[in-house]
Image (cartoon, rainbow, N blue to C red; front, side, top):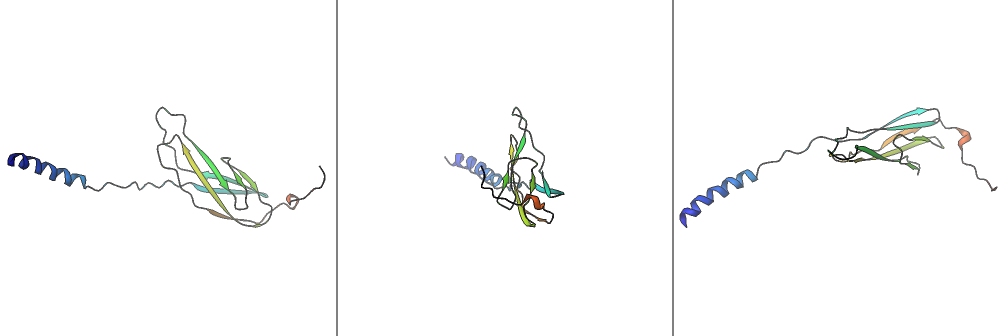
Length: 130
């Protein structure tokens, strides 16, 4: 019995030492950035998302985007165009979801944009006619 313990004890000591190794953390940051361009009274938004890592045998990888424009409206388009009704500073948010991708979903930060050019003819109008 003593011989068996003398053989097994070093095995467990070595196994314990190797099990305590530090695992390297994934330091790659996957960030989806919001880009915008003013065209007259419209703002065109474009997501700048990281490259997708295709899963073997799966359909083609793609992003699904959800946008909030800071005025209570939203869009599920990939590259939406927004016409703001009044000049103001708006906080735009983007949620990008990767589909059929091996990586983590990218994070994004809200982006403040200042709208100064609005079309007066776009003001809300109420109508009593049907």
